[in-house]
Image: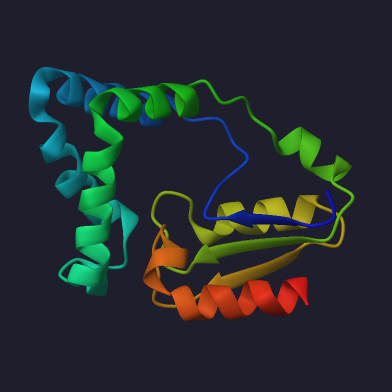
Length: 151
């Protein structure tokens, strides 16, 4: 690996509260109410100004529909089983950019700062007016940042 980009993520394991929320969402999805999960999650995924933006909202809703409830449940279970990786970050030895949306509710900037501080030489970049889906919400800014970083 030559370079690493960590985008809208975190190194921590889920808290007990996060696990409970994920289990509740899995339960809702398996009860046949999967379409209700994404509209419920949308305010946690995107910047408040994008909630009614069809170019963002419709893409997220269509993507969720394509994924389906089984894959959604598997994704949530995988995240719940994620181990705390903070102790491993110091071992990363490639140029690393840690990028997030300023208004990312799920993995806020302080968690990205934590990763950037732990990775030798990492750079933190925060994209304004963006939530957890920065590449979708601010595609030109994220592309420019990654092109510059790769360049």
